[in-house]
Image (cartoon, rainbow, N blue to C red; front, side, top):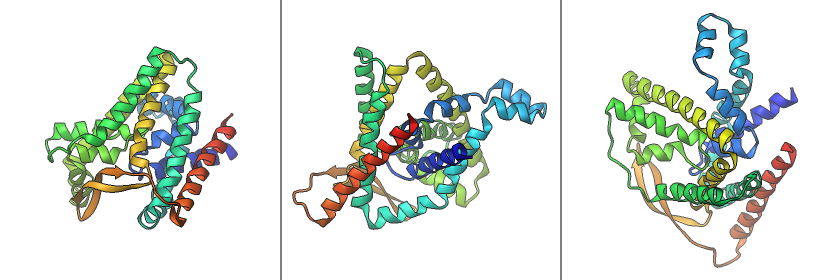
Length: 297
């Protein structure tokens, strides 16, 4: 029972992360130590799993796919999306500096502790962390594409957009904005119940989830240290988005709401009450990850 409650809580953390720009559910999964099991469980949805399902062998299907683990994790994500995530949206709107600081502390600590799990530091590991960082940083300089309702492109959006759920440091919604189809797929297609677009995007997401989980699981098993270094680089690259002291430099309006594309960062030049509280929140975020890491050992 205790293990299942912990899985639900970790899933809730993933759900909260998915509403925060620059943070993904993959980051939380990596921090909380369930990343590899998550990838292994997702990759198990293969021909054998499909065969078990067709023969109505639900018990073996559940065991083979580690379905209970996935149910608790994604169940927790859904709970947070419809409850706690709304609270964090409110906090971001009313106390942005303090909440950004909390998450900066969380992500900064996660870089340190995840980096400690890298078993071998060599040229390949250093190169992977540099490439991962540059790839994540480069996303902040990409100009958004024009909207495209071509079904093949929508399918591609599903494949790439779902990467924000698995790859640490990437935001799925931000990727869709860069691809030009955020409003089309996340707003209009839902409100207008556009079945062809919704199904194409869904199938693309499922395809991307299965392919990416298989590929990452293979990479971690074969090149553990290099892969973990690359994932750590993705998280490092996301720090520029999470940095608390910033002003919006570029944004677009989607369905009446502002979606930020880039920020101008700065350092605080005085220690007023807001900045002191923000620094404290940053320290709290750091120690939250420390406690999680200590509990995972």
